[in-house]
Length: 129
Length: 129
DNA sequence: TAACTGTTATACTATAACTATAACAGTTAG
DNA sequence: CTAACTGTTATAGTTATAGTATAACAGTTA
Image (cartoon, rainbow over all chains, first blue to last red; front, top):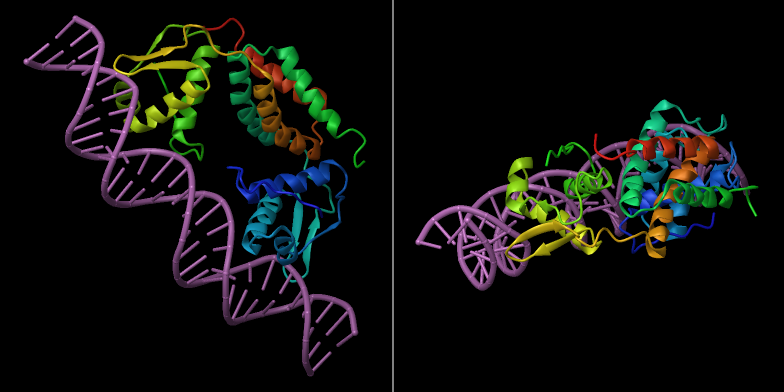
């Protein structure tokens, strides 16, 4: 696990950690059933407190990405990550809305906005490099 | 100005206010040169402190959306809102990235993601109702 | 003159993020 | 059996952000 966090960012580091792990899954570097580091070892690797790692793990657990086993450890959900349901799509819409609002204000057209999204999607083409 | 804020949301209300005003601009309800309410009157309308409104106004000013005149008032930038430059697109990418990462994890394809964006873009078709 | 504008200053509360440290109860490898 | 490991819980503290309350200042405008 090579994880780089931005300690200067206003985005909480536990939140950054959540997304780094999601990136691992999206890149197919992390597959269902794979072990994740213990809260202590990951915390010490990154140089943060174990409770901060724990907070990230619990958010991932609540969204169904991982399973936490009390005195054993943490694994990527062996049954795979939960699919996008209506609830997720609603949340996604809510998050996209302000981005699109500002883009329209700034005269960034739908086509260019979509191109931008496609560029990001391409980042994940083919999985791990 | 009919502005509805969600006081239960974890999103700061000054940030919500920023986006409500951006929505007004995107919907063409607010046009270049239009007056905005004074910090006191808007604060009292919404039921919040004038400093909170002030904070929102200053963020909008820093991004070039509005002009603040010391002892006169606040207007939508008469020269129009600044266009999307490279710096904005970079910021937009950074904000889109985690949304797309999670969508890929959840097996939400590019096509469906784009459809969702288009749905939101359509909201603004034709401007004010 | 009176009512208005944004600005500045001080002071306070509440909450979220993060850290530090310790202890507990099971698991597992040697 | 023991020692090292797992996540969990609890307590306590710091820091920064968000928000409120109140007051005063200086220039604008009707």
